Length: 118
Length: 112
Image (cartoon, rainbow over all chains, first blue to last red; front, side, top):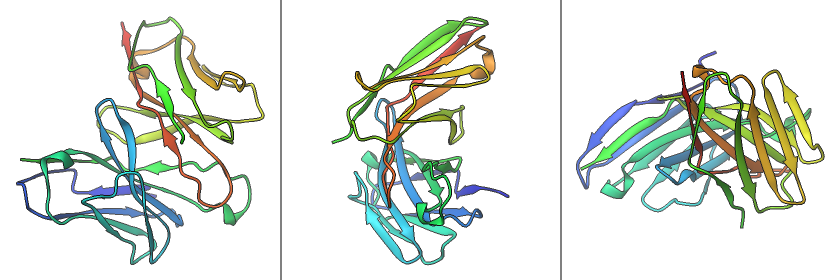
């Protein structure tokens, strides 16, 4: 199993450019998440999805859009990048408590994408 | 709302014990976690404790939970250079979708 993978690993954008970050997981997880990590601020949730075709806003959704057309993929889009979006972006996934068993809400993380907006 | 706080930095000598502390605000938290982030990598679950427990031990790791003070700690015995990483405290509740709230992370530096 590859787990959670993210592409690209690094990207530099100019202000106003757009890009899409791709997250893929092969664990058949229902839930997927996008976080951003900034120094001294920990992880902040941007958007999340509880299933194919559904998305919801997290703490800091402004300036980002997401789509979950396939269960295994979760895309994060920046339509018009701004310097304030310079950050490290992490995708994560977890299974649903509705599967039963002992649910501990463990999230599995990808390796991150380092984005710089000039 | 939920808030999870940690100190930003801890430095220890190799072979000593490390204690990383965390305070949280949500008394209805069900699970409390410690995640580890090694340089250039994503977070990985290190250990967790259910809220009806006071302590959990797993090899060199000891998690202590003080529900009254809403204080969580992670003790690493015989700290090794490979333990150098950022450690995140997090909390969550069960039942449907329940978001996980992460702390700011504590960077552990192990001095050889």
